[in-house]
Image (cartoon, rainbow, N blue to C red; front, top):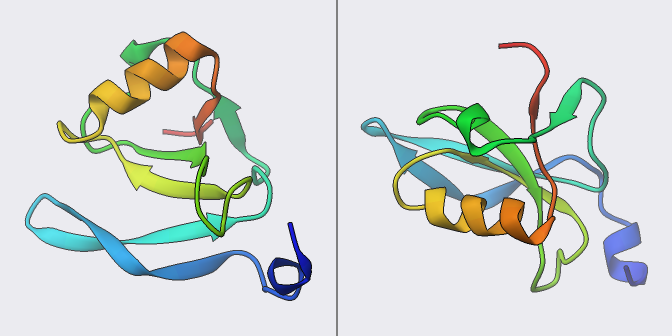
Length: 94
């Protein structure tokens, strides 16, 4: 990360959100995986509506972690990440 990114205060809320279940949910950006998160080992752990965290692979926040909500629009991308060994995290409490 460059100097500009180092001056950011993490976590911070992005200006965009996730539309799910009839409302907008915020997306947060973290500089590291927060305590209390567990790495997903199987797609079965990612049911619709579950919040997850995954590394941003492109753009100015590359290397940071974004939150999201499992929904039909992202399930194939999450499946591909798991198959490629790219970690996806969920809260270790339900």
